[in-house]
Image (cartoon, rainbow, N blue to C red; front, side, top):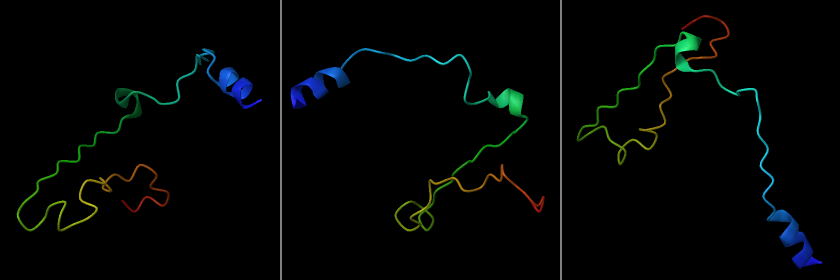
Amino acid sequence: MLLLVFQLSCTNTSKTSSTALFELMDNTGINFENKIQDSKDFNIFTFRNFYNGGGAAIGDINNDG
């Protein structure tokens, strides 16, 4: 039974979707670039969330920036 389940899971059935999930950046109107400048005091070793890029507010609900 396990061998049958394994064989069925390895079939080559690729599903293609005609609708795109994301828009290209040119179509969104968002111009954002997260330039990271590391230094001796501010780097990934001293600041754990250095490369997370939490600077873009795409979903600004209340328009406060």
